[in-house]
Length: 128
Image (tube, rainbow, N blue to C red; front, top):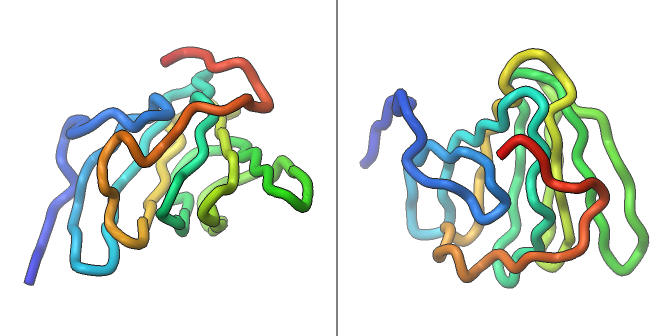
């Protein structure tokens, strides 16, 4: 059994450039806290094998997702949840004045940086 407190500082940098604070991992999934500072835009990536569920806990932003059915941009703020399916290209940006903070469940657990490949995005990356 695991118990974790949110680390004060970043424990990893995601391939998209966002700041990750690792929390807990079990056989079939992992949970992290993701932070993107005001004015920042992530790099666009696509995951090879994992899928994710996101829940915004603080801030405001936008998330772009694209798959074989098309693409869309959604506004996000505290209380909004969304999914990133395997093979979906995605990118996100902070449009507010506070940190954009997201709890992310990854299934199966994050296997390492090789999981995410750079791809063409919706916005140019900024403020990393």
